[in-house]
Image: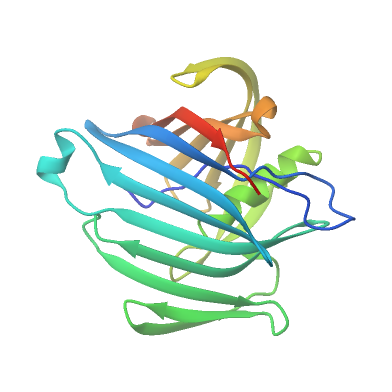
Length: 235
């Protein structure tokens, strides 16, 4: 349940003279609730010599720390091109979920394949189209919102398998979160064959940063994250 698209981030800086969008490096903090348990999601986007590195960390808070220990840490290094995001390296260390996992994946766009390890077991896959890890897919979605709107589907490499994620626009509304009140656009996504539907409310004034992330399963709310603070970083 904790292995969700929690990340919700936007970001930016000019990567080259032809870049169509400007990303703002930043730190963001979300109050997180999974079922009845509380938690915290911290995200950070920084500029690197070759592109960006984004880190998302989930950890329990309050009474939840008595029932669960550990954290989920995910890091993605990626580049920005004229037509979107290209992941390069992805690392995950989950010591919080029931099925604890560690993963390290590399994307090779010259050969069209990805490879790495999951719990010390080698994995590899041919990528015939652009694919994203669980962090970089969020930046690609935000990139597309900033440049005309999201595609109807994306390919996600979810730790050890490729999934097709269907995306739809669900309109606009005013949302209120601890970080403020915003006009937001709603985007839903769902992996083919999954019963989980994730809804993100993204704010144009914050470069389409999601300020609310909700996940429903069979019509019941299972997870909700709301933005509590946002801090732009120096480049």
